[in-house]
Length: 567
Image (cartoon, rainbow, N blue to C red):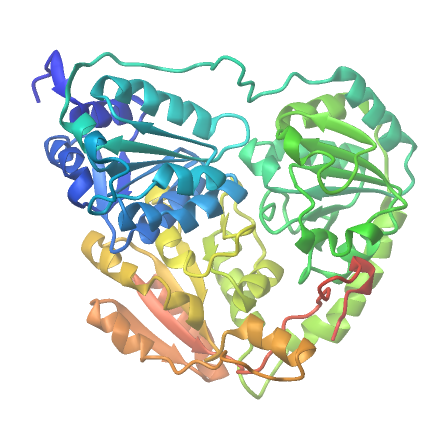
């Protein structure tokens, strides 16, 4: 294309995105964003557009792409329902710290506030679920808005940005000049490391007899995996992970003691209330990790490292607050602490882990008859992939089972893609196709329940059109399993509207020209998983699992983590 001095606002959108390194856009066209799509037609050799089947699919795909590619994900949607269909994904990306730039079309500026066709106040609606949003009504404002959006989305604690562009701004002409942001006045995404806080933290760690390291997604976002390993090994303390922190620290490392939270491992929950110093890295003490806050780690001195000042002292008061990037803070701490060995303390975790194995895990993995269990399916998948696949989970029992039984070993730690904070059912299928675009050389497996799959299954059409290679594993219990589990345990088995009558998923996949099979017998499981993993192209495997199986251990709502149940 011949570059023009004077271009339209719509073309400026494409030039600004390309200037930021955008190679891929997930989107769905409509009336108010048609000028941008027309400009996209002329830039199709420079940027690839993936036509999804629903705007929620676009934003979840952009999330999956952002988390595996470690770049800003981009999506397009039109005004009105197109824009509002992004809201769930925006909320998901905000709470899970995923960098996105979402561009929505809007009615012409003269129609704003008139209830014009497909007009909605997406700025007002999206304000609580975006890191930053802006409405642009003049073409010449577009390059700066997009450049600023990318800087904000990716800086500090990452998050989603929404840029709403009126149709007259898209049609308007302007003199294009590239804009780049390296800083914004009064916005300091990377805090200055407090050396005194590092020294105070090191003194607590050096004096501790039962120190304990909790790792959250902040370590992954900071790309601090090596620094985390060095700090953990020098300090000698046991290491546990949150849901989104899984993958930051090897699950086979001798200091790794398990997964935290409501359905996490027994020992790491119990021992939280026995440690004397708790070091929390890039995690926000959400309620699924803490249980009853009034009874959470009251005996311990808390060292909290987080890049987001708003997270420090929000839930758990910090004895020493380190407002810093995880990588920088861990590097400084490693240089300050003394080398220690806490093997006796780590061994005490292993005693509880053995209890969990005897009462829970052995029964989940060593069955020779009866219905298939989710745990044995995930365990076998983990063995066959050696823990090195990119695993994308939806929300529910299968998500918790996967977090417990998949042994994440992917070295660059982007192998765990899930909806952690918002718990968005329907996340996995579109996020998996985005994850595959972001990490094309990896095997990407979407593990989904039968309920969540039906929330965004229309994206099978996107997979068909793009011929993207995603492995889909449906764990089908014909129930909304996690809700049913709670109904069984806490509502006297009143199974209120959780029983599902499902379509034939195999035939459904074949309607989209996707190879598929169903297994319900244990003797067929291994070969079916081999077929799933070895098939060239997308494959769907439906595994029929126990209808009324429960996920244990479990911390009941409102209980202390010390009250975690093994049955």
